[in-house]
Amino acid sequence: LKLVRNMRAQNDPWFAEYLLRIGNGTEETNDDGEILLPTSICVPNKTDDTALDRLIDSIYQTGNAYLKDPEYITSRAILSTRNDCVDKINLKMIDRFQGEEMVYHSFDSVEDDPHNYYPPEFLNTLTPNGLPPHMLKLKKNCPIILLRNIDPANGLCNGTRLVVRGFQKNAIDAKIVVGQHFGIRPVSTCLNLFSHMVNYMSRFLEQPRHLT
Image 1 (tube, rainbow, N blue to C red):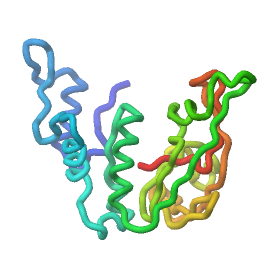
Image 2: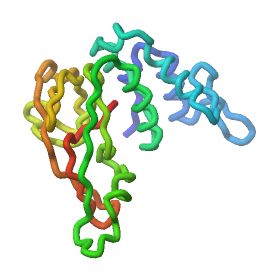
Image 3: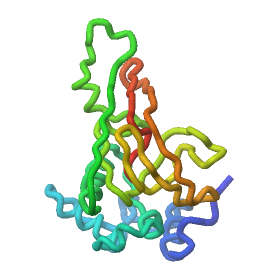
Image 4: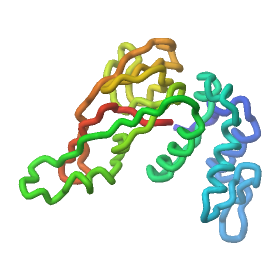
């Protein structure tokens, strides 16, 4: 089985062909077998946050009007292979949204840990795959992504993208903004999630979501 068409990059045929050439092994390389990335898709790696800000600016237009448009926000994304990079980008992005900020915290514990070898302060620093961070900062109109299958029949499944519309103390009012369930506004409440990263870590989350 071999992929031959990039459905997500139909509006950018050059990039789609570029990815296909890389996948097929036909893209030109140097003597070490390395592929030269075009400067137009690269951001210089610097020790400060300037490069990260430039990356965000290149993907998202500045201005509150753009950040209030769900279609604009959900039509683009920044991908990363590391959770710590995602968290840095999310913190910078949330600061760009206007309005009141709501902060949710998780309650972390480990199964069968009578001697408290894993104190909560340590568990709070971990972000296992599939779990939101210990501290989740949100604002109205910011995009979020669901990390669990809650109600697939109504569109609430892992990977569903939503936009925050309001807050409650232990719940989030959000609207689904993609797919056949577009416009549905479920209210998400607390869930108990688990990870095998540290023995059997339990994270009681106020929200099984992550900023996108």
